[in-house]
Image (cartoon, rainbow, N blue to C red; front, side, top):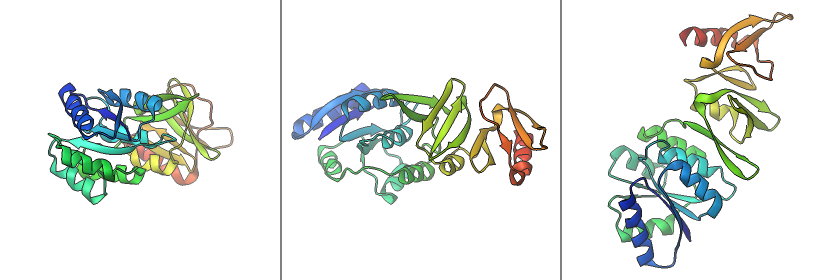
Length: 245
């Protein structure tokens, strides 16, 4: 198997490399020191397995795994972690592979044999149960074969676009594979649904106004391309969320 090692600490990467070299039968396709580097490298080398540290500065391991899951050839994930009771309980409850630090060769060999590709549902549940990463800080898109990370703080709204969802952000517009209902659940504290096909960032809203037809329209703090009309059934909730901030 081709294995990508991801850890922000060089000694930990060295330890994993040595264990894999000693066991034989596997190829180390690369190393990464943080989540974004891991995604960029995985896109180039298409590993079979990613050994992924959980606690990393910036993008943590759970969020990195979410984005890896979106790859066309998604790798299997094995998390590496120092002892964390809640994380381990969550991994075991969701049948997700992990090894404890300091990593032992026998445990790593077993984890590699059992490595499996993860589902989004399992990753969300692990984040919720462990408290490590309850929501992503980015959404991930592929543009002409290149990986693009869009910070959630830069997103103005998500809007249904036929069978995909468009993410409209401060630097443009991109198509993503995420379902609108899953985005609503994950980012309920930051976004409000204005109709069945759109979620708007609360902080991006400047005001509400009536259009010529008497419909309630969302006015953002910046320009946008879509008519963001609030459906009647959502008007009260939108006003409540905006008032609450």
